[in-house]
Figure 1 (cartoon, rainbow, N blue to C red):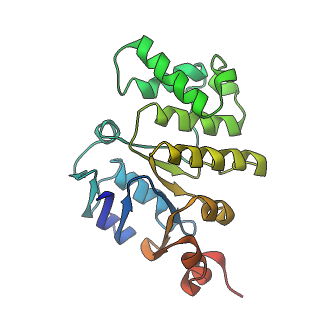
Figure 2 (figure 1 turned 60 degrees about the vertical axis):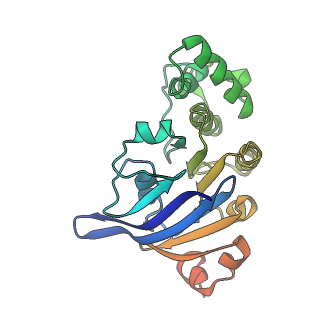
Figure 3 (figure 1 turned 135 degrees about the vertical axis):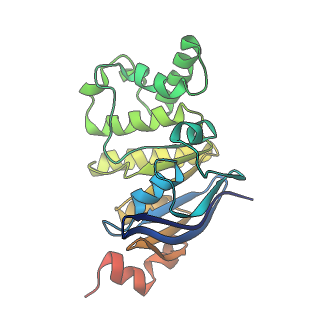
Length: 237
């Protein structure tokens, strides 16, 4: 059974359509790449999936349950968490305290939350920074902190919004390896990314959006070989 079903989802802002009749499914444990030009509606779809925007039409089924009308905190408690394009650490708090914020979704015990946070800090490789103020981290480590914080919510599914954005090749490689390690934990992931080499390496399947509509879906090789995708996203001569 699919862990996530996007059923004819549309999102309108006034007379403008950000998403239009988008449908696809995700199976448990897979990595789905979500790509498309700037303004294609990728982040808007993330916002609809995770409860920040209510879809104007259609439905989102997560783990057999409709997400209709649910707020982001409820969606998170049901097991779906997301990162943001612009990382927003609690700058004057330590790394471990930042991650504890995510863990407190699952427990009221500060002792338990700290233990849960440290587990995820180790997963992302920031244990040497656990007592460091989050505001002093370089961008690559801020990205890892963001991932640790959502992992601490104990999700069944992660939505990663340009988690490699602004990173150098070495930092991007570390994030790629982290995403693949998270897959081994059995956590389903949907990843928005503009780096096609990265998305090809990590994705089991790819959905392409263009002007808010689903343009293509398939294996990485099928998608990059699709002439419509080449024209709309990769560019054509």
